[in-house]
Image (cartoon, rainbow, N blue to C red; front, top):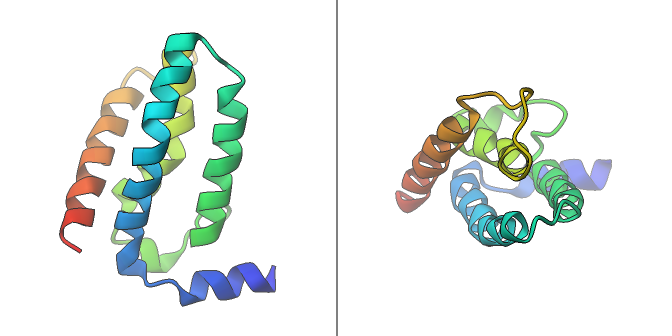
Length: 116
């Protein structure tokens, strides 16, 4: 726990959008391939990777106040697996506006990363 706290404390918050975009750029094509292949098992690993990413930046369990300027990035990272699962197996439990909100957050996060 202390090591995770120290790792989080050492990261520059302004690097978060660029790291988020890098993470999503790596994950999204893999998600698309899993959806095309109807591979539900992909999403278990995707969830593990998402949790690890969020823990590295300190926003999984509690908000990291240093990241408050980048809610579009935290939302995009956290919604990624849910959006993928809803695309793979649409259901009534899938929030209707989630996919479009996710796409908008990814775009806004990319714009924030480009400013770095």
